[in-house]
Length: 195
Image (cartoon, rainbow, N blue to C red; front, side, top):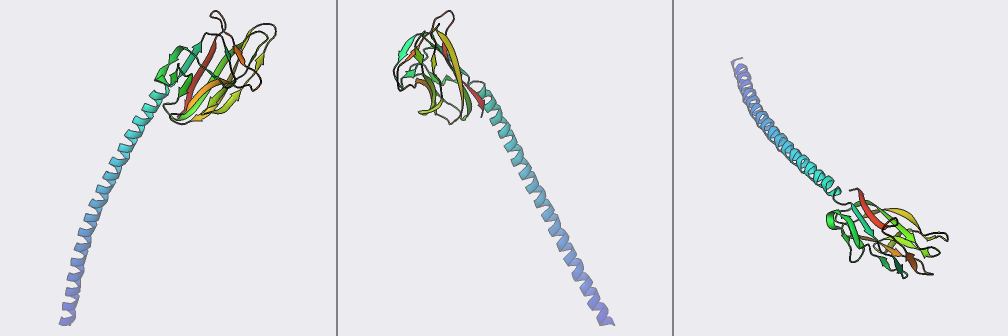
């Protein structure tokens, strides 16, 4: 019986040692989990701060990507000739080049482009809005009674450095664009709708 009691005591002692080892290991694992949790929390917080900063930057940049450009000159445009709007009313972000008539996107996103054009009496005007050489929208207008203005819009998903412009598109004749300071302006505008 003494031998059995010694065995039980030895087993109890071994179990007690094992329990302490497990407790120590559990404490160590809890500490490690807490450290990893804190590390993950710090990373998530950092990503959130960066994301908010980027979103704020994008929203601020959105407000600077509004283009509103106006020409006040009359012109006969040959087929596929670009319309260049020389008089710039607004060019936030500097995307419009008044030498080439082309808008270059400084940020990727969905844009709305709009054109108002005026044709001479008894003359055709055939403008189109072009994105990287591909037509987005075309129009044609002819009026016999008086010079009138028409407009068109197009929406496009535009990448950074993509170009959008307006050109004459008819394969049959020139486009006769008319303007007068008092009441008829030709205009081209681009507006960032969504990043």
